[in-house]
Image (cartoon, rainbow, N blue to C red; front, side, top):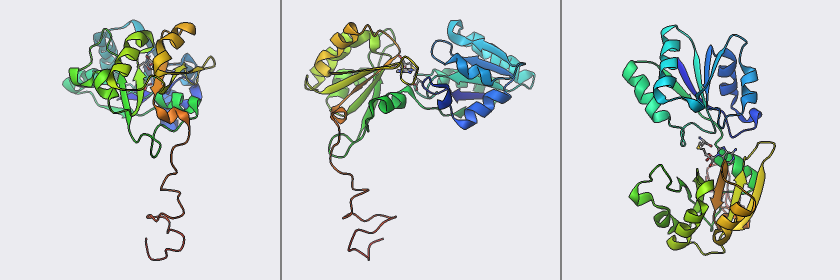
Length: 256
Ligand code: SAH
């Protein structure tokens, strides 16, 4: 059995309990050495065979999984953050389907949420933004035409940019062209949840300069949007005048 496991954003205690348990039981582990914290590997048994996938091709990774599966071994494929975001697991799962090898996916804490926690922000605030756009700047990997930053920016929603720390001149230009005001708050969160985590607050108009000033070129999450300004309107959920399935409004005994 192959288990695609989310390792979390960096801090080793941010893996899920399920993911940690699978690591302790694994016969084979393939981890993305470029971003996964190697401290997690102390959970593995001394007999576990460990591979770093950072220099490997899809074919090489799948060959290890295939061999593990054919020998009846348990294999953990450890991805940074949550495996479903920019984890390239679709192509691995397609290969495993083709080979008839069983697998499962164990979610993880995405670096996006590690960054939101570092910022102490709620990404969806009433009256400010109720949507989160997860995207990236186009670099060597293309982005579909209809998902260009410039088009997504027209919503003025909260936006999280993965894989973009080295492309912020271009990102800034697109965000401004798409309609964010230059003074819209933005933040660069470098290595969220790692010991050297750093938070740089700026605006859409100063994103690129901020990255340059602090020499941030990789492993950073960019968050853009007015939610970074602080509290929006009060939520309905905890409003004393609003009834819902778990609580009646004050003075309103009939609603359920
Ligand atoms: N699946 C991962 C993302 C992998 S793509 C997840 O859910 O987090 C790699 C990109 O994720 C990096 O370019 C960077 O934008 C972001 N990233 C990964 N770890 C990070 C961290 N600790 N802090 C900030 N950004 C991080």
